[in-house]
Image (cartoon, rainbow, N blue to C red; front, side, top):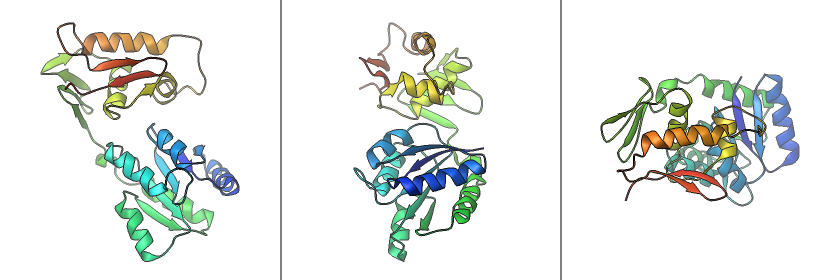
Length: 224
């Protein structure tokens, strides 16, 4: 099963694609505009399916933006613009495949399966932001050469923030993408783990990298 983000403004098309992919066991999250899709695409998905012509923000601009932010989630572009130069533009924007409309749903499924079969080695295994770094293979993290004693969820949290430098991360995003919750539990689990992580990353004699964003969540910034 894959977690898929579908960015499609046509409700009927979105429903048809959702029903077909759910029939193959996939989990689908939908967004009906480029603006909403961009925000959702910053979360953890296995594949993005992105319509080209969207309200608020063009689908290719969505892909260009997340690629500039270091997000490498595979993206399949679907579009009524099917000329050769349109397909080339979609691939150069960072798309991994381009499927002109109209298309048979079974072809979309086949292309999705092909994208999912691509080697996972293309994902980054070493992340760095200023003095902060994490080796995803050895599950080790350090700041300015000082090894950080992080375990389990703390390492997951640090990886999540390092993939989104400078962006506000809400508690809801962490609950959904790091803990896998699809509801808001009545607990302070996020705040407890974030407090532990921040104490280990930001010592009193160091410039803080983690920041509270009042009423919204947290942000990881590179020191200036």
